[in-house]
Length: 383
Ligand SMILES: C[S@@+](CC[C@H](N)C(=O)[O-])C[C@H]1O[C@@H](n2cnc3c(N)ncnc32)[C@H](O)[C@@H]1O
Image (cartoon, rainbow, N blue to C red; front, side):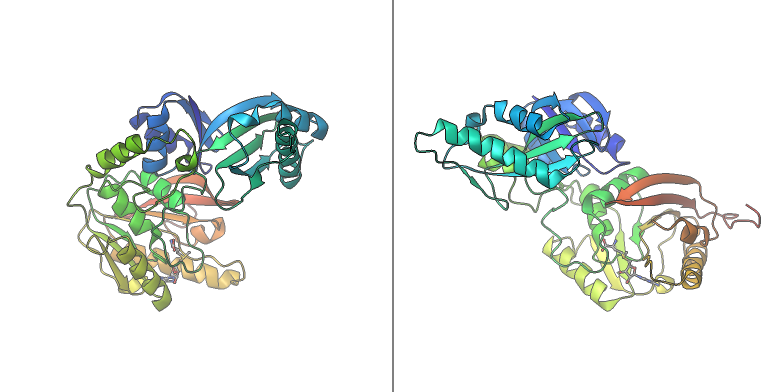
C-alpha cells in the first residue's frame, strides 16, 4: 500500500531516512511529507517508531477540483460503505492551499454531507453513521494542494504523533516533540558525547535525546492509534512489532542534562522525566545557564531560548549577548545548536554561525543555527 507521512517543513529528508531504515520503498520527498510504499507492518512500525512523523496516512483517492459542487460529487463517488456502517463513527480534517476552495471548515462540511448523503441513500430507514471528533473509528483527511489536486486519506495515527504520551506538564512555549527529535537528528549527534539543554523548559529536548540515545521507540508511552479501531487491526502483528522494537532498548547511554532557571519549568521537566521513567538517564537541575558547569568536551548543547515579541529590542539584544558570552566561556570545545524565530536576536550572540537550517515551529519560521565553540569563534567586527 502507499503511505504518506506528514512532518514539519525542513524535516522531510530526516523523515525519508527514518522510513528507509524501516524498510519503506519508493520513497519520495514531498512538501511537509514523504510518500512511500510498504505493507501493514510498515504502517504499524511507522506509527510506533518514527521520531519525525506527524501522521501516517493511507490515500483513498485523488482528483482535481476547483468547485464545491464538483468536490461534493467526487467525495460522494467514493464507496464509503467499505469503511462505514451504523456502528462506526468518523471525523474529518481538511487542509487546503487551493485558491478556489479556500475554507477548510467548509470542505469538512461539504465532505461530511457527501458521506452522510451516500450512507443515508444506502439505508432503507435513511439512518447514518455518527460523527465523533475525539475518538472516531475512522479519521479521514482532505488535502488540496496549490494545483487543485485533492487527496482523501485514512489517518492511521488519529491523534498527531507528537503526542507521545510522556509530557504531562508543559510550561510556556514548549517545543513540539517532533521538532525536537528533528533538531537532534539534524545536529548529527550520535549519542557519543554529553548533550545539554541549558534552557530546557518542560524537558522536551533532553527527553527526545534520551529516547533516541537509548533506542526507546518514539511512541513507547502512547497507548492508542487510529488503526487499532479498524476492522483489519492485527493485534498479534502489533504486539510482535512492539516487542521487537522494545527489545532494542539499550541499557547504557551518554550523559544528558537539562536545566532551567525557572522553578516551575524545572518542576515540569522533573515530572515529565519521572513519568517517562527517564530520571536515571537525564539529569534535570534548577539553575541559570551561567551557573551550570559542563563536562569536559566534546559535547553538544541544543536549546531554544525564550523569545517574547513584547520584549524590547534592547533587552533581547542584551539577553542574546549574555547567552553568547556564556556559551563562549562555559562551553569551549562544544558544538552548539540554537533554534529561534528571531534572526536579529541570533545576531546578538556575537558568534560565527557555521550552519543555518530553516525550520518551522508551527507557522513560525525559525533558524536552527550551529556554532562551533572553539578558539576564535568570537565574531570579529564587520563579519
Ligand atoms: C522557549 S522555553 C524552552 C522550552 C522547552 N524547549 C520545552 O520544550 O518546554 C525557554 C526556557 O528558557 C528558560 N530561561 C530563560 N532564561 C534562562 C537562563 N538565563 N538560564 C536558564 N534558563 C533560562 C525559561 O525559563 C524557559 O523555560
